[in-house]
Length: 191
Picture (cartoon, rainbow, N blue to C red):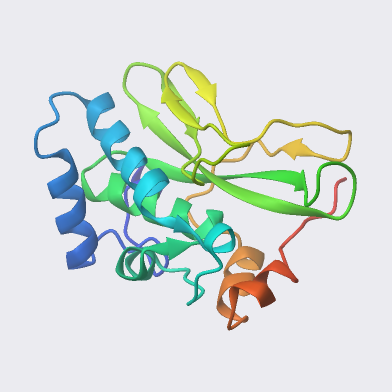
């Protein structure tokens, strides 16, 4: 579990602001699940999804997401992983391949998290941010993610990554605006 508890360049759980926020969020929580839910709800509800709100700057590092209060799904997942790691709860990154529109191509990756809960094992949760068409919740052991798989070219990718995929980091660090990221969303080839 060491990799899922460690601080890193993009999941900088040892950053003072991230560590302080994590401690503040869980101060009155009595159980592991309450601590996870508090961190999840904060990222889902208080950090604005960059595209939904057309907010710059483009963020990637967890501490930058916290500082600017905005991030694409990938960046929000970096912050949630960092908050959880800061309080000693193993957290990783997961991805789905989804249609950019309502159905069919083009496709892109969507970032979410997995957390290791003592009671259930690995559990996926999605702090993307709710809106009229999205209702992600923390309801273990049942998953209630932001998106469901709708067509044959979409996928729930089974891996739990300790670090962000390089193509996700490249998309977030090589484009200067949310519009540029939206025009260059990361995707993978299905095999």
